[in-house]
Length: 399
Image 1 (cartoon, rainbow, N blue to C red):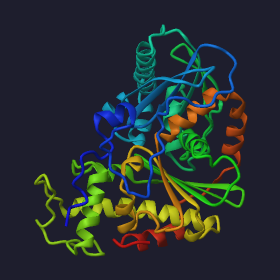
Image 2 (cartoon, rainbow, N blue to C red; image 1 turned 135 degrees about the vertical axis):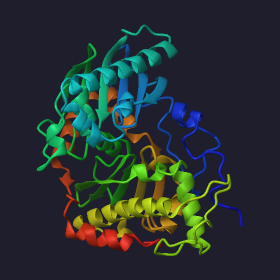
Image 3 (cartoon, rainbow, N blue to C red; image 1 turned 120 degrees about the vertical axis):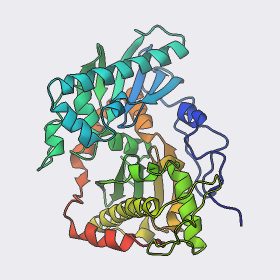
């Protein structure tokens, strides 16, 4: 048997980070990639000039420069979020922002990095750095608060309420931008933009979107409503130094071969990867809890929307980890539901794609705000349905 975790590219190589079009990327045969780096998008703008879209992720930043009239993608660039040097998670950054000068420091290093990205795409497109006449910025609530100099403290303590949900004009590093709207304290503008990229901002059949990065955000379109939730997941797939998609493939193969039991038990020293590295029980447990959180989040949101797995017509995957995983492996271990009748599409950086849509179609910004206002938040904290589903999802078996 050929190990399913022997891959040339797991979606995180230099080519993928630069353009998202690596020819060596491996995905499930029934999961075509919908590239987020298409050369041209539709544009409704009449004004000439260029504009940019920026996605502020907790781990990475991404920017794209467009010709506003034609919708042509002129350049893209990405970089690590420099706040990673302060803390690798948003909770740590909220704490850092509460220290003397902490917020101003976090804002300054972030805005400097964004400005550098905008200058990079302008340079690549051979246009002056002051050429952009408009910009759209998206991201999670904590990142948008810090970028605009607002204290993220309310997002980090009970009752976890966001006093500001964006969806307005701001000035960042001297540039006028429109900040995409957030849904709540844990579900940000990045998910709103991903919904737009997936076409889930309009009426249609039951559809599931999973944006898996440092956190996993789940959205279900059903009965004319968007149901959303957020759960922690992403960091577990990096804990042992193996890229998440490779790790997921390995565990799927080991469970299929009986080397890892349904409960996650394994013989010490038996889980050896192709490159000689060895997975520990702690590595397996980290993936087990992360995949259980994602699966339970999906099941809970589906239940809240009164939608069955079998009713889903499409599953969209996005995010730093979501766009690189092997769907077959995710289904085998029970992270994603087994839905033979549903199409499966990898969106890449859907948050950036959605921000680009709002850049090129400013008339859609009000509808984006309406989407954020009317989306229904499903609180997973202390939710007995989620707790029950989480326990069930701890088993390594298809849902």
